[in-house]
Length: 349
Image (cartoon, rainbow, N blue to C red; front, side, top):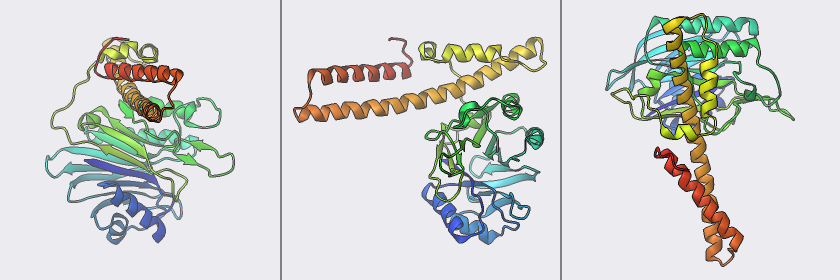
């Protein structure tokens, strides 16, 4: 099982911070770590062993400029073999090969600039990285820009930088993985805090299809103003999974709006068959992301339903259940059954 730790660590040059990274790696059985803002000008083999509990030997590193920046990718060399690497202005990339299956993919760790005028160069750089090798691709890190208004806890508008970020994701055909348990990944930690989702994991469809399922989870923000993220992928699939339409999508809230919005969105300067192909690819990506988010929402709701039903069952055992409670329990069980039916592909209800 693949597990990648992603974290803007805000400095890796003290023992306490190194011990925290090590704990996250060991407890979560991480095989790859992608750190941003290490604030280290030099990284040694001893440093990578220290933060991994001796588990990692392989790494690539972009030094900081004084106390600013610094990017690291480290990996378990017993599981992954480095085939190629590149160090660019805002990112570092390593091509890794599974030592058992010889499957190759690209891992890119990004630390984006916080100046709008510089952000366009990030997307140009990453596009160039993707063009060098046509491999399954995973791009993670602190992009220092949001995509949507709901990515911040304060009201705002979609600006040019946000639009350019989303356009680049669409053009590259990437999936923006949702975080299971967090809305924001950064806080200024002040009273009436400002919060935002600056950290992301973006994957190509080929990368996602290579695993039996992947999730992105937030970890405790114990010693940085950024939350660590854990990207978990299931067993490596030898055969690519196929895109499949699910019947229950047709009666799910938001499905028709998503299809209409995706299809009617702009399609750059394409014409004819190329325009249709681009729209279909974008719709497929949108549906995969929506499907993933919908499944996660339903699982959370089923967990809530199970707790409520169990509580009412306990009340019944204690002789505390009244007629209104029984009616509520019937309703909750009905909602549970409906969710189960839809996940099995049914159209009833």
